Length: 115
Length: 113
Image 1: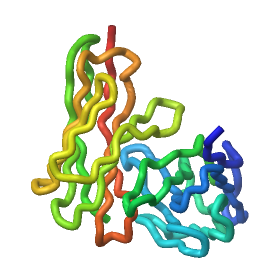
Image 2 (image 1 turned 30 degrees about the vertical axis):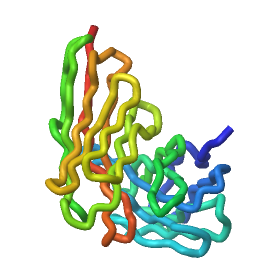
Image 3 (image 1 turned 60 degrees about the horizontal axis):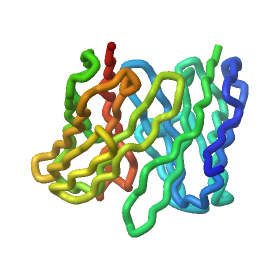
């Protein structure tokens, strides 16, 4: 089954404790992206990657890191989480066939709480 | 950050009503526009990818139009059903913004029987 998976789905942590949220897709998609969703603010893009070893900042990259060592994986790293990073996070992927950015396939979401 | 506006913010209609929402985006450096449907407690799912001025796309009772010259897209739902209740998001991709997706805040639709 074609899908985007994220782990963990739920996480409660404390300020300053490094964490990684994993994202994996099995559709051989080139484009992968991370978003956060906050009430009243909609979906905001954190980082995206056009392909292996190519990453770019989105609208709200501060406090986050990403890597794209393999095509299928795009982990989101919070080196020193803070309470303002409490949010619902989505990973997504898509093809870039024909020069057009196809529909994004979203993962199930990760609910993160930083105390 | 590019300005992508959606209106109305929320909408409540009766079953059987037809409705429409608007997504406004920068009219310059257009590359693509996406529409997504987001049900509560689920993940967003793609409805349409639109790339050409004048595009009209349809999926069942839902359709969308695109005007890149004036910077807007309309999403129409014909004969709304309770299962259409969801938040509808549009996302603009600009050719000079590194191909990042810029989402609007969405239109929340509630359809009551």
